[in-house]
Amino acid sequence: MSFKYQISPLLLLAMSACSDVEKADEDVHEHELITTVVLHFTNTADETDMLQVRWNEGDDKGEEIVLQNGSDYTLSLEILNEEEEPTEDVTPEIAQEEDEHQVFFTGDAVAGPCMDDNPEAFIEHAYADEDANGLPIGLENTISTLAVGSTDGDYSRKNGLVVTLRHLAYEDGQRTKVAGLADQLVRGGFSSLPGANDFSVIYPVVVE
Image 1: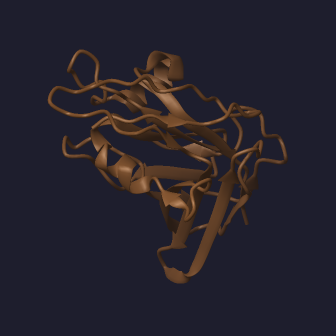
Image 2 (image 1 turned 30 degrees about the vertical axis):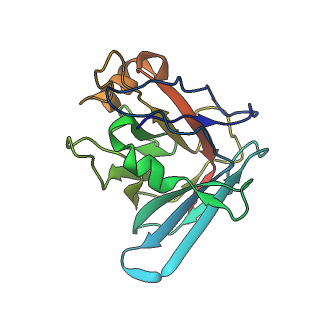
């Protein structure tokens, strides 16, 4: 199935509408609205050390992420439509459409597969899930803290941790989610990738 997410334009959020693309012998899904993105961090050495940070529609950035230096964390994404009653969890639908979606993790605070060499990074990202084709999804991840640091209140487009969900719809019956998209992003930015962003949210980061 293929479906589309729609989000209101927001300050500092690079948003664009996904186009409706039908795959052969499949129906197009109802459009979905994303109003909230929640990041869930759990310290792998102490499962009582948990952090939840949110971005809500209308906010110019997400809540501040505060992590402990020298630690590893699991990071899970929860993607919601809170205009529904009760709240609709959109995450399972994105997981079902795993061959059309990938989350990219960028920003001045970050080292990882979506970033070029970044000696100033104080957190490191790695994917912890993959789709049926062996390609990363990004709903489940690991974050390692590398050094004490913060984004110092400067939330320009590349600062902090930038979490971007890309909808990589089929084109002419062919997958556009292919191997090497993170490397392609490093070389050419988001404009070099197929598809369109469903959301892109900046989270300020502090490592203590």
